[in-house]
Amino acid sequence: MEQARVKDIQARLNMLNFDAGTPDGKAGERTRGAVRAFQASIGVPATGDLSADQYAMLRSSTSGQPQSPSVAEAQPALTPLREQPSEAIPPLVVAPNAGPPATTPRPALPDVAIFGVKPLDRPDDIKAKLADAGLSVCREKRSSIVCSNHTDALSDIVTVGLSDATEQRAYVVLRETRFKEPRPRAQVEERLRGSYAALLDRDGSTLSSGELCSQQFQALQGNDGLEAFRAAVVDGRNMTQVSALGMACDYYYAVNLPAGENIGSLSIGLFAGAPLRTGPNDGVAAGMAAAGDDLRF
Image (cartoon, rainbow, N blue to C red; front, top):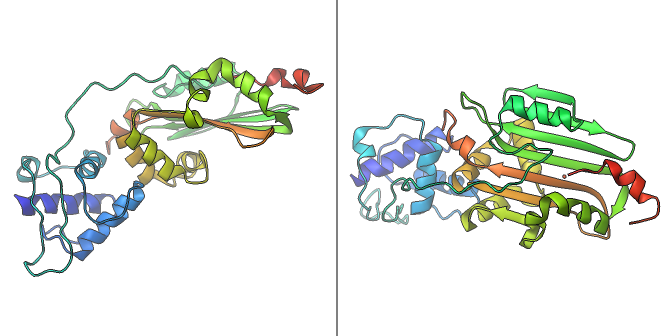
């Protein structure tokens, strides 16, 4: 049973292109290296020892793939495994109760939107809402919708990432706003508060479904703010990390404002993990008020 569980781990790591070698049930250095690479991709310490939560995330990330009955039924806790009794490499550990998490009701998403668009919206609804908001210049792909609006005072770009499920849903909605001239921070925050008080009043201007979700998001975004999501949606980069985040997060909503008294840009991101789990691989000075009339949230 223990050998079958390690074989399952190896096979799932290979599915995600983390080379664990031939799935033979032996926890050697190649397997541990693949485990470390997987852990680094999801933003946790790369110890080479797979925790119960990490194993559950690995299973969820590859849940669309077939699995032998003997592996699927092997649920009891594992003792440490070694490739050979005298092997110096520390064991690959899977903690007790490492099976898939029990099904529990998912929390409702916060009532927050970008130009009326929310995670879980459908493509036709998204395009209609953005068009109503004046963002009618759009580029569409199978997995994304990018719409923009440019005025004399600012540029708005909204990027929506779509799941690969048959019934497509938005998993992330991003807004990036750049001002032609920097605006006083107090003015921007006042305008934001009408729609995003629930975010601005929280530490870090974020709302998260849990601590693990927050940790995973911080590891993914690094110093690039919401750029990691934009790169995933538009360029197809970081999708392994984004998919892993989908396993850890029911939602993560954030407002990013640069430091300083005057602000030249901002970004807002709304992320929901559910669409990723259901796929087949299952952004008041004088004269500023008039220029600010086109700043809407």
